[in-house]
Length: 251
Ligand SMILES: Cc1cc2nc3c(=O)[nH]c(=O)nc-3n(C[C@H](O)[C@H](O)[C@H](O)COP(=O)(O)OP(=O)(O)OC[C@H]3O[C@@H](n4cnc5c(N)ncnc54)[C@H](O)[C@@H]3O)c2cc1C
Image 1: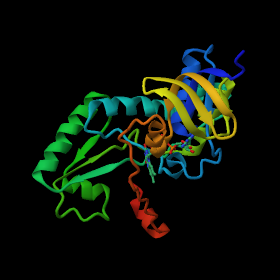
Image 2 (image 1 turned 120 degrees about the vertical axis):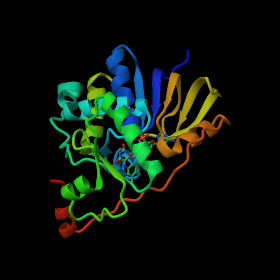
Image 3 (image 1 turned 180 degrees about the horizontal axis):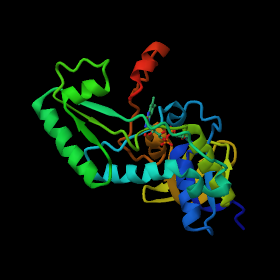
Image 4 (image 1 turned 90 degrees about the vertical axis):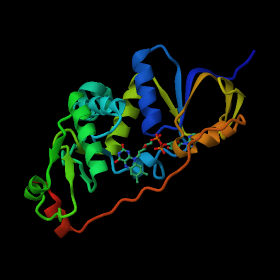
C-alpha cells in the first residue's frame, strides 16, 4: 500500500501568486485537497515583499485594463472579498495616481489612443495638455512635454504584505495547507507531473501543479528538462526626501 500523500493541487511558491491561486481554487471548489509549498514564510526575498505595490489602470492592452478594473475593486473592498477568514479590513490604499508624460508626436498618439481605450473600459484617465499639467503639478518643467495622462482615480499604492497575509489566511480558512519546504525535484512530463520531491518531506503525489515560484519558475521546469522563458529583471525604487515628497503630492 502506498502511504505517500496525494494532493489534488500542489502550489509551488506561497507568495502573492501562490497564495492567491490557493484562495481562488479553494473558493471555487472547497473539496479540493490543496498544498502550498513555500521555503521562506518571511517572504523576505520574494518579489511580493520587495514590490512597490502600486496599481494602475493605464495600460495599452485592453485585457490588462480589465484585470486592473477587477484588481482595484478587490483592493478597495478586500474585506468583502476575503471575508472574515482573511482577517484584513483595509489595504490602506493611497489613491495618488500615475502620471505618464509624452515628449513626441508618436508617444502623444499612443497616450491618446490608450486613454480612449482605458475610458471605454471604465478607467477615469485624464489627458492633460502642458498648461493643465503645469497648473496641477507646478514643480514640473513642461517645456518639452506634448501631453500627459493622469489617473486620479483607482491608481496608487497599497499594503502588499497585508494582501499576502489576507490571501494566506483566507486560503487556510478554506482548508488549504501551507508547508514550509522547498521543491527540489519533479517526476513526469510537462503536461502530466506525477510527483514532487520536497527537500524535507520527500515525495508527494500531485494531480495538478501550479508553478508560482516567481523568478525561479524556470528552475522548476528545468527539473523535468523543460524550459520556460521567465528570467529576473532588475527593478529600482527611488526614495525621495521629505521636502520633495511634500511637493509631489498632487492637488
Ligand atoms: C522592486 C519591485 C517593485 C515592483 N513594483 C510593482 C508594482 O508597483 N506593482 C505591481 O503590480 N507589481 C510590482 N512588482 C512586481 C510584483 O511584485 C511581482 O510581479 C509579484 O510579486 C510576483 O509574485 P510571485 O508570487 O509570482 O513571485 P514571488 O513574490 O517572487 O514569490 C515566489 C515564491 O516562490 C518561492 N519559491 C521559489 N523557489 C521555490 C521552490 N523550489 N519551492 C517552493 N517555493 C519556491 C519563493 O520563496 C517565493 O516566496 C515589483 C517587483 C519588484 C521586485
